[in-house]
Image (spheres, rainbow, N blue to C red):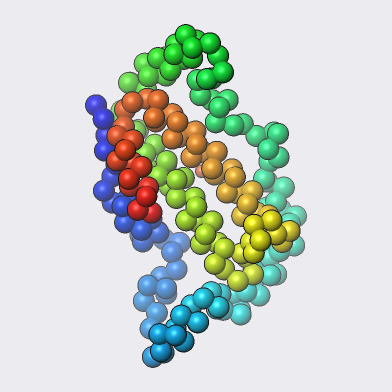
Length: 188
Ligand SMILES: [Fe+2]
């Protein structure tokens, strides 16, 4: 049986998230012209006191967070955990068949969790774009040597591997409606 994507994922993924700053949803702005409001939103994405906090955290991030990012050569890749397409066709098909035999036993509850995880990973571009709207954190050039920018790129690369693995695994399983999931992800 196929599962269709969950309809509530078509809403903004952060709408119900506990870490979405509530004051953004309820804050009352003073009356401003449209041009002034646009200027304020674009040029002051983080108030000075928060900017100072992020700046003060940079040495800690350099010492304690960046080392957590594993080098690419030491990291697993999705292809390591999936049927290997570089094999002769028969062997590849045998591995796909074995994967489908294993996944046909998975409960729908389990598949719903995997679909939710996959859609979350597929929204990675949204998260990276969001980070890059923040003063003091953003990666201005996509190759910035600032501490936060290095972390954003490294974290994004790692999360992308999770998404690639989940997507291919679910696709090969044949247990879920991939087109519906892909359409849902387009709304994030
Ligand atoms: Fe992840």
